[in-house]
Structure formats: C-alpha cells, structure tokens
Amino acid sequence: MSSIKGSRVGLPLLAVVGSVCWECKEAKQDGTSLSRCKGCNRAVYCSSKCQKRNWASEHSTLCKALRRLNAGPKASGKLTWDEFKTLQILRYSMIVELDENGCQKPEAINHARAVHYQPKCENCLRTPFDNVASETFRLTPCDDCKLAFFCSPNCRAEGLEQHQQKQCSSLEDAGACELITMDHIKETGEAMIQLPSENPRHTYKPLHTAQSWKDYFKDVSNSLFARYITKEFSPADDDNACLQACRFLKIAVDSSSLILTILAGLESEIPSLASRTKLTIHIIGADDQEIRRARMPEDLYHLLPKLQHLVVGYVGPDVGSAHGNTTKLLEFECCPKCQSMGRSPRQAFLADDLYHDFAESDLFAKYPPDLIIAPNSGHAESQVQRWQPTLQCILELGVPAVFTTYNRNEAVDEEQIFDTMGAHFSKRLAENPWRGVLPKFDAFMERYDVFYFNYYWYIVKGRTDI
Ligand SMILES: [Zn+2]
Ligand SMILES: [Zn+2]
Ligand SMILES: [Zn+2]
Ligand SMILES: [Zn+2]
Ligand SMILES: [Zn+2]
Image 1 (tube, rainbow, N blue to C red):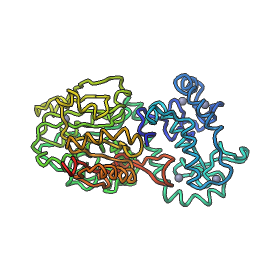
Image 2: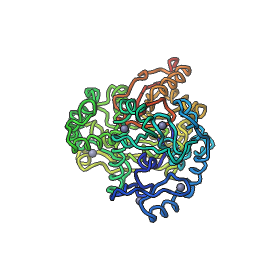
Image 3: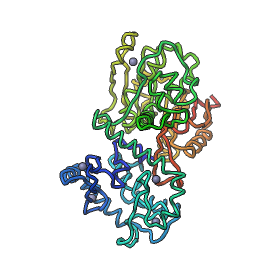
Image 4: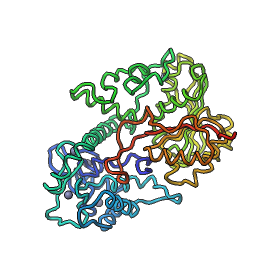
C-alpha cells in the first residue's frame, strides 16, 4: 500500500493511460493526439518543449526503468486475475526501488504508478507490452470513463458489462477528480485541497450526532457545500455545477478525514472533551501527505469552542525525509475569528524518529499526547518487526491510540497483532464513518476492490493486564 502513500504528487492515472501530458498534465486542446516517448513508448507529451523539460527533470531515469518493464515478463494469452496480479507484483519488483527497510523509496512513486495504472484490456488483462501481435492489438477506451480499455470487439463484448457495473463510475470519478486537483495545483500552488470549517462554532456539537458527511457539513461544520451532496455522497442535483462541487468535496474529504477521525477518537476517549482548553495530538508514521494538510488542524479549534491551545506533533522517519529537518517547533497563526476568541497560534512539531525513540525525548516530555493516531500505518503489512517496539511503547504509555487502515483485511491483521500483545481495545475494528470517499486503486488487490483513506479504524488503550 505504500505506493499511494508516497510523499510526492505522483503521475496521475490520466497520464499513465496516455490522456494527459506527463509534464504539464494537460490534454491537447485541438483534439490531436499526444506524442509518445520513443524510448519507453509509455510517456506522452503535448510538445517537444514539455518532453525536453520532463526528460531533464525525471524522465531520463524513469524511461530506463520503463524500458526494463517493457522487456520484463509477458503474458501470452488471456489471464486470470490471479495470474495478472502475480505478473504485476513481478513488474513492480523489477522497477520500484526499495530502501533498506523494504519500503518503497519516495522518489519511486512514479515507477509504482506506471505499474499500477498501466492500461490493459479489462477482459483478457493483457497490455500492449505482452506477447501480442502489435499490428492488431489496439486498446480502445470505454466510452464513459475513458480510463478502462478493451483490445478487441470480442473482449469488449465479454468484459463491458462487468466493468460498467463494478468499476466504470468510480474510474470516471477518479479521472474527473484528478483534473480538478491539477487545476487546483495550477491555480493555488497547493497540492492538497483542504476545506476546514469556515467559522468557529460557539456551541459544541458532538461529531457523533452526524450520521454522514452531509450531516457533518450541514449541522456540524455549517458549510454551504452541504447542499451539493446527498447522504450517500452523490450529487444532490444532476446539473454539472453540482456534479463538479460534489467531486471537489470528495477530494477535500481526503484532507478532512484525518482530522475528523481524530475528533471522533477524542470524543470516544475523553469524556470531558467539550470543556478541554488544551490538547496535544501525536500523528505517528506521518509523512508529507499529512504534513501538507497543515491547515486542517484549525478544524479542531472550529469544532471545539472551549479549545484555546492546540499542539500537533508529526512523528516518523518519513517526516525527516520529506523535509530534511529534525525536531523543530512551528507556529501557525489561527484565523482572525479564532484570534479574537483569544486563541494561541496552533503549534506543530516534526520529529523524524521512530515513535518509541521519540517517547524518550524532551519534546515528548514537554508535549505528551492526549491522543495518538497512526493513519493508514500498514503496520501488519510491511516492516512488522520494525513496528513492534513502537506498538509496545504505545500500549505501555496507556494513551488512547487510533489506528486506521486502507481496507478491512489490514485492520483484521492489525487487531490480531494487538490481541497477541494483550492490548485493551476501547474500540474494535469498524468501518470509519469519517473515511475518505474517493476510491483509490492499485493492481495488487482483488478484482474490482478499491481502498479509501482511513477506511477502517480501531482504538487501543494500554494492556488488559495493566
Ligand atoms: Zn505538456
Ligand atoms: Zn520514455
Ligand atoms: Zn482483450
Ligand atoms: Zn468505463
Ligand atoms: Zn479559526
């Protein structure tokens, strides 16, 4: 799962399937097709200027890897999903560089995406780089999503219905959301769409009174955006503006998910939450994704009227690799309304230690956590041994710790690990009401499965024998 959790904004799905230029991320306006890199036959460009720029910045390295990929293991005939998955894992291991801990290096994110998103026939699961007759093998897109492909009228006839039932609309959404995100980056320079509540609340409205994101936007955050979505997070209306607003919200929810999961954890673990004036949260295993969403913690000020002083610590080895900094304290001015309510600037620190080492530091002693959260940590999926002392430390601290996962299987595996450690569960695994709503894909999952940010959650607090 580390593929999507990389610290950079990686190649969009739209680029990997050849719909937008790999450099400027735009489609050609005049309808002519993009030109293909002669080296790898995968990268596409709108102009030679973009191609040159992309070559200099990253493609010279990526192109070499992609040529290795093209020469790699090949399918000859129609594949089952399991056969395809095995090939994909081989392909991934051929071109994605891992660090000494077996984790994907952050700079390998585009290598990974080239594997996960490579266009294939949805029916026979072959790609143009398999053993196919290149004169006759042409992938043509699904008319609706334009992100799934078929290699022949036969394959289309056999595969289209399944695709339309199980996949088409989420792919269409994913592509449209990528376009919105790319526009946002161009307009604002910000890679993350963040939508913290606009105004601080004056009375506390518990989050658990909301049953859906729509309830949250309408009754808790009092956001005008509530009117664009239904309780099921579909567009409330069938006009285009509403559809676009709904998609914008879906992207924003990827940023809100963590902070609302924190708030839900606080509500469940701290009975006096509504009257608390100070809170310290530790986000562990944090990386660039969490740090770039630095505006979101303001939500805790806006949703907890009594809160005056908030400290958020981002702890984990990837914090350092993303920023080249070790321990440092940052201050974020809160909004003018919060200032007039006498609130201190939000404080944050980055510590690029493993959590159990960090727990020995002066900084920890100065800012001990009221709540720990480990978003999408995957601690049962990779680096299991390396996580052990951290999990041990968390249980010994006896501080409530929220864990989230990308899918149910991960959560089941993690619960098992904590059970063998004698953990006390304040909350057993469940689907997180504040999970992301934008489906994510990679090629290692079961057919048609998708995952979400913070999809499942559970809370541990100390051990049963303490
Ligand atoms: Zn371009
Ligand atoms: Zn190339
Ligand atoms: Zn086919
Ligand atoms: Zn489709
Ligand atoms: Zn504010």
